Amino acid sequence: MDFHRLAIKATEADVEDERLKLQGTASKRTLVMDKHARIYIAGHRGMVGSAIVRALTASGFDNLIVRTSKELDLRDNGCVAAFFAEAKPDYVFLAAAKVGGILANTHVPSRVYL
Image (cartoon, rainbow, N blue to C red; front, side):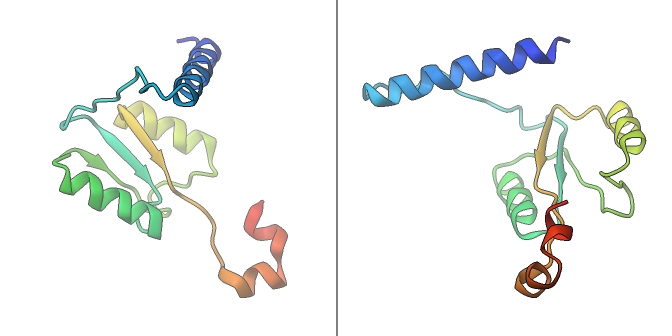
């Protein structure tokens, strides 16, 4: 699969959507996800990730894939590649992040973002 071409097509479609919005015309794109699709939510325990899980569950999606950071270290490319090869998710929501709050940002701001 040529991801570069897919990214360009997605960008072109986004530009077209913005053009249509400026003209007051509705977007032509609609994403309809299969309720039984394999959906991986990275960061499912956090504020955003848990909200995604609740929204998908409430909407009837029944094949959610979640892993804790102990089960899947997203910083380890090999582990991530093995996980994706095994789980084969159809959709991925990336809500994982390193958080530390105001105090951590004040004392070691670069660690939170790197």
